Length: 493
Image (cartoon, rainbow, N blue to C red; front, side):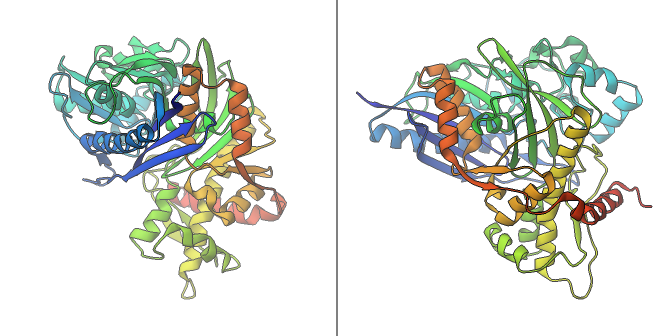
């Protein structure tokens, strides 16, 4: 009998990967392609939808061929994806109609300001759990419609629906509740496209995909060279929620931080929605069978982006793996603070007009000081999010799971544990979003149950970090950071 596996597609902002997991939840094969990002105007961020699909197809074909050659039966596919990025394509020709508008894009800042001025934010917040911000998909979709006009024969969706359309050769046009919850067009309580929201943003629901559960039958593969027809696609989930699931944060009160291009901080709050507090976001963590799990979320627009900028624009190092040693080589930042507000600031500030800054430079400032300040900025932004959680909801956590590339940086993880004053755990499996999507598909396919997933996650935990400094001893450090943030926001004292 053939061995069984699940292949998960993880389509991110800077790269696409496909990862195959065996019946024990172990990674057996993987493939990766880098993705380019375009910045055609200040504040605009775009990607080519055709490249997003081509990179997905190439990695999936590579991994599928390896699985079949090794006598594995591909039981299901799963999709994890960058969330708010918006794609428009022709239903007949299947061709993209314009570049994808990436989640970081700020082109709809003025639209968002008008919505606020019209007094619509309280209603939008109530129905969606999300504040008005260019980050989310609805104003992106409205902008696209202004450019294309109202056409009946095109699709308007997030990246997951675009990939599904191509995997099934246009036979399936759907999204899941996690991605739909990031558009600001889905009612977070009814889990359906809300006509009032569609009217506010000017986006006809007829153009939008069908909303399904995160674990569901989304369709089957069709007409793809080297990929068998008929493989069921049994899970689709936004990458941040996939990471929460993949990190094993299946119980209320468990949280995770994914350190990627930006960072998503999610806390599982169980099956009941809560009244959202100013500056925070409520989202769907996942829906499996008839159970809905909600999460409170903090969004950080730039974490890894700041490190990449130091590498690519300032040439301070050649590889991000060098940053840990550089940060540890100096006692502190020498008074340097870095606020990576390249696309404004997210939680808890939600100011699209904030701009990045690097302050405190002297003649004695070395590259190591700047690199340390950039790593500090990552940890301090996460600290601000968790502080908001704790103040708003009296949430206390015993453990926070950390994933993404920067979770391998020992300096950053120790600082994070000191700031948050709770233990952190990192995993030996750094494909956490892919893992979460695969877990969901495996549950749907009957390969695993929730006890299996909890056991597989526990076995994957690699390293723990415990607080070594008391937070009161770090208050000057935190206070100086907030002064820098205030300058970024324009609140100069």
